[in-house]
Amino acid sequence: MSTFMPKAGDIDRKWYVLDAAGKPLGKTAAAAAALLRGKHKTIFAPHADCGDHVIIINADKAVFTGKKLEQKYYRRHTGYIGHLKEVPYSTLMNEKPELAMELAVKGMVPANTIGRNSLTRLRIYKGAEHNHAAQKPEVYEF
Image 1 (spheres, rainbow, N blue to C red):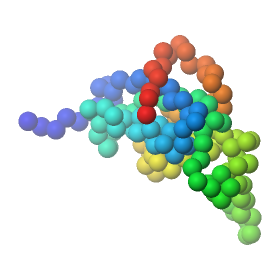
Image 2 (cartoon, one colour):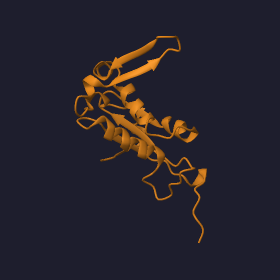
Image 3 (cartoon, rainbow, N blue to C red):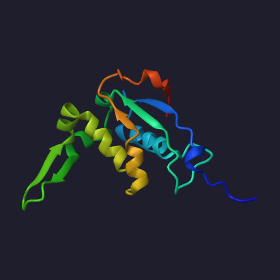
Image 4 (cartoon, one colour):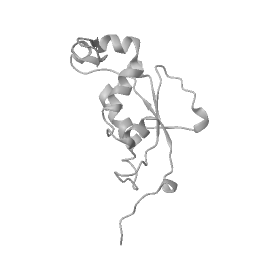
């Protein structure tokens, strides 16, 4: 018996909705990353992109454990000497909670073409409303 190798035509992509309200941001991001990779499927192969579409709602209601909200920083560098920009996560969650969730998921997918392609199937919304009802997404409990 040979090992099954999934092809592009074998992959059936579903839509899932994850509600981040009251749940830790990291646990929500880990569940989203696993769905985007397709690790929950029986046909999963690390070299193939077999993941699903993921919609995360209520990103602004995700919680942080411990003192991460005050002590954790989002850092980026402009490329110029001394231009390191730091934003505390308390400010980031108030202004752009979608970015905080996207950065968490991005850190949990592989840093290659499969990971970059899987991030295109991620949709994050601040509130409880999303405009993907036509795709009939299933609620995913984690």
